[in-house]
Length: 252
Image (cartoon, rainbow, N blue to C red; front, side):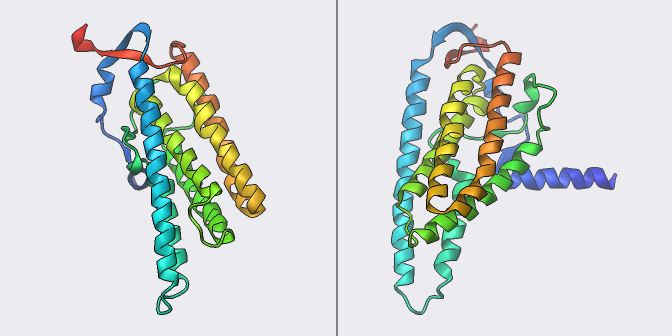
């Protein structure tokens, strides 16, 4: 009984930190189904606009953080480590909750994973937030090293590439987890979070090899995730690899 309670507590803590909802709160999405093979152009435009706006907002925040750190460093009475602490907290916020800057619905739903057919080798649901917590820590450490390497500047190419990567991942989450568009999720996970992770890791590695090595495990995990998304698509009907129009069941 104790082990069961401990397991439940751990899951609750992990889900809380990562913002994963465990209730059946996405019921409106489950009431939608594809009735045609018609391309949802509106959805594509929304994804693109939402991603671009999120990137723009996060770049603006990077600029603001740069100004704030500069201001802090100009005050001799402020401890020298305070700017590093502030940078670490900011990068932690980005790594764990980048979706707060998105206009799209990026709610993490625990029950989405339960309602689809998965391959036998698929990790259990709890593994995902735990692994993402570890990845978040690696992102913070590697990005902080890059920030220090580049004279405590935020508005620099590596960190801009990093926020682009985060925004692409958030958009993919909207497509797969929230809207359950299993077909469209396949090319998006490959061209979005997976490819951008390789790019960011390569850029970090060029500037600071240690930062690149620290971030490299995220590429391994995203490779596994991309393969899993592909297998889930295969096992759940192989719908077209583009967003299809969804119509509420009560309109059928």
